[in-house]
Image 1: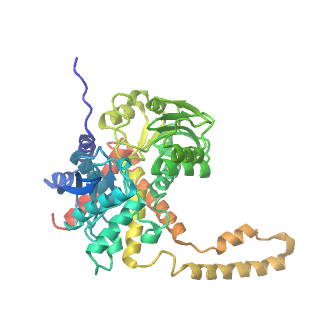
Image 2: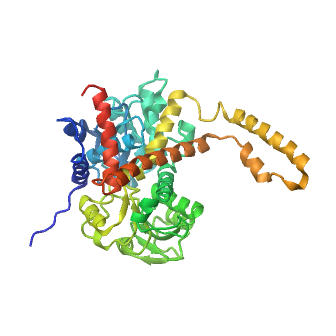
Length: 476
């Protein structure tokens, strides 16, 4: 009996790319130019820790320089390898093109388990890794701009930014060398929540698409929809929190490393999150059914499934058992190429990763622009907006006095209308607009082309088309 071999993450990305370009009429050679990674740098460096020198291996892959700087996160994980980093860099190229962020694609990784080191040790390792990359211009405001990824966050980005600044003391734009920094180190409001918020905005836009809803066999709004989230890290937590608190969705399942929680009446996301922060896992959480076999909950009945952790969690072994109507890929590559084919045949709609988790790079773009402009969003116009709105309120108040009880403004209207947009409101507005426009570009291809049978193919067609147009404009 022939054993079915699951394609690797890198092979999955290539297979999905090939499926899309087969439907395009690209000039000879341009298809290959877009597909291949331009360069991957491997660095090996030593750090003296615990009385001995430990050697670490890190990567930074540059997939496409059709636009510069190139952009992409740095992950700290024992699973990091060259193939994974190159596949993620390729996804970054297509993701940036899809959401019209003016970057090429890049990705980085350090093979390390960050939980095995204390904060001081991690800082020394991170700074040395940053030094190795920066001296090769693989961290640079105009050439290569990293961001957080799995195993990294604001803290690590602050260390990297400081290390770059120490090495480039006269670079006035040094803070723009990396995004995802804390607010007090040049970050931007709303960056921590950005990817999860982007997942929420993506779902909201999908639920405005009547034809897409019909294909997913869904009706109504997000209110009351049953949602299972795999991975309650930064992305999964924020997506689940916003959907439950702001859209009325029921988070019926949460899957973590140490099993899963399930409650058809809905879980309290904040309570689960606080439990994980305190106990390091979901085991022992009192207000839900706990099962040690977490992956089984992926196969529970639900309306929306949100894989928000590792790649390849939905694959040939379990795709046939998935019962969700809609899958939104909050993680990178959570569905393998083989799993994708099975799900499509079942009629399950997938909102692809290159769109679904683009909230992070979108708000990173805003942070980069903020760092280059050296001024926070809203500083110049917020009070002027409020003054203009005050004129309208004053005129309405005057009319109110003349009309008596027949008509009056609510105090809440006055308060909301008078408040000018600060940085967080502007960031959320820009992210919402980006996710709407990007979905609409995919939607048009999905619904209008018979050969674009799913959203992933539509996303690749849109993004590859934009990358191809950039290269052709350069004369390639």
